[in-house]
Amino acid sequence: MQNRFKMQKLKKRFLTLIEMMIVMFIIAMITGVLAYRYTGSLDEGRAFKTKVAIERLSTILNLKAADNPEFLDDVTSQWQDAVVASPLVSNPRDFLRDGWGGEFVVTNEDGVIVVHSPSYEKYHQNNQTMFSNEGSRQ
Image (cartoon, rainbow, N blue to C red; front, side, top):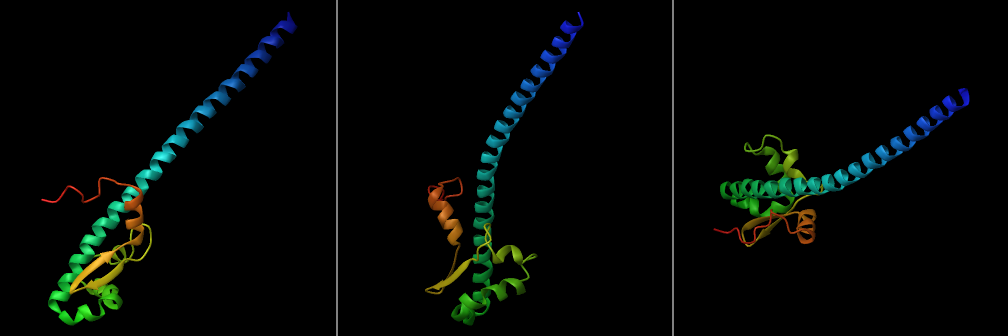
């Protein structure tokens, strides 16, 4: 009788260990799927932040050029100082780097200031997302 009681305890422990392993496996699978999806969301967030920053940065620099046309001559070297000094910007650090931490490239193309982000362009080439401008012109 005592031997039978020990066998039941032993079986119950063994079954509990298997159950725990299955539950841990299921949790690991769910975590892996969520982590994979979360990574895509982070990239979309970075792309959105960069796109908005490019638009605002372009507006700020073009307004500066409208006030001071000589600014266009050295826009590639002075654009960061202009952003920091602008009253339109509450936190200039948000406009000095893109969502991936890379610097924006500011150029003067025939009197028009153009802002580029190599990281955003690379992301945009790899992932055609809802942030593309194709078909949204009005």
